[in-house]
Length: 557
Ligand code: AMP
Image (cartoon, rainbow, N blue to C red):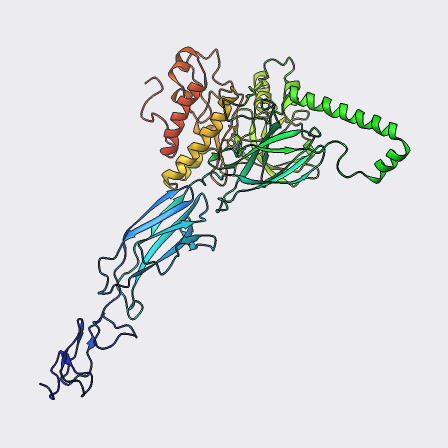
């Protein structure tokens, strides 16, 4: 066959080639005398590949894409395609979309893939920078050297749907003293592990060295703080932790900073003149000032900031909340723990609910020198009874003593005008029970569990302050736009001593017996342990998207 034309299925590249060669796999020469074999339908040669190379095809889709999610850190992995297309150069590309309900758009640059999003040779990738409480889809596509050379078989695996829940707590470190004088310290810090744009707050606990029991807590939105009204030439210890929708992270190690001695720091021209022209007068003034500051500090120590909160039972002194009972005049009690607001700063917009005491409005609050904020306004109806009035004031008094990301924050009260008002932060998604019923099956188990973690965190704080809620239920939890859950409804004594059944009925016909611990029903023993029972019922409510507990049973049963 040497000098003859090659038969079908064979080819001779040029006349100099001695023998006819068999067409490489997946190629064919249809006519005799062929100088090349063309690829079968669906098979290709890469541009760099010669006639002696087998024709190959794009790979099939990767299989079984799986993921694990810890906080906002995602790992994706998958099985290689069942058909590599006859090649060994398969690589993968991962496509990320961020979705809101059914509308998805490509992920932003903040989402980082390690080692990269495309050209992956191994079937796995880590994804960082995802946002908390956000849904994403990830699709994985397989390629090889002949991908894109013709209509390809399905090479993208079905997209996986990832619902990111809470952000893992951020560890706070790298403290820098940015400024100090004899009565203040300014400190900033870094939160380097925080990559997503989830809302983070910081909690700063500080105290004079050796005086740990008398600490003060501040909550901040930025990673820096200025501590004022400090003693001169005194060492202060400061510890900081982050608070994400999940709750607080770990405290940083204690950081020690010292204020300057009283006469250090910038002396004003006026003081220099005083020194020159009246040394004695100046010393007198300085001493007077010091005595005044000490007195102020002593007063502060005697009655610590009611923002004070402790999370480490062993180390910190926890201040029990103060009830309204000891006050002969409840209006005075309220003023101790709340801020009386000028009614001209409050604008009521629309009714958003009906509470125990009257209508609840959405509105706004504009305090002098501050930005307008959206608030919820609880009003006390004009036909209030004495007990309603007392409970209304009690709710404000108790709420005013709490300061925690999972407790609804009190902005202030109006008690000197009618209608009386309790003004709190506005919770966009309203009560948790209704919210879950309206959004059935829209949240992943991770999201539901992080809602419960938030509630647990708020309830832990309450129990640390000796407060027993008695009416923990999804209807008494409010939800923010970012799905953060906050405990509300304080000071209610709806489970009344004279209510033999231990039950009450609200407008919605909800019977708390379904939420109440057996010992509380039988013996009226309400403790943090009975709140824990109610929390168990709330867990059930949340995971069932707001179903009624023991739905198939009557109260008697
Ligand atoms: P309550 O008197 O606390 O039971 O409130 C009655 C209803 O008003 C609740 O079920 C909510 O729908 C609504 N509501 C109360 N407080 C707020 C708030 N801070 N933000 C948004 N809605 C609220």
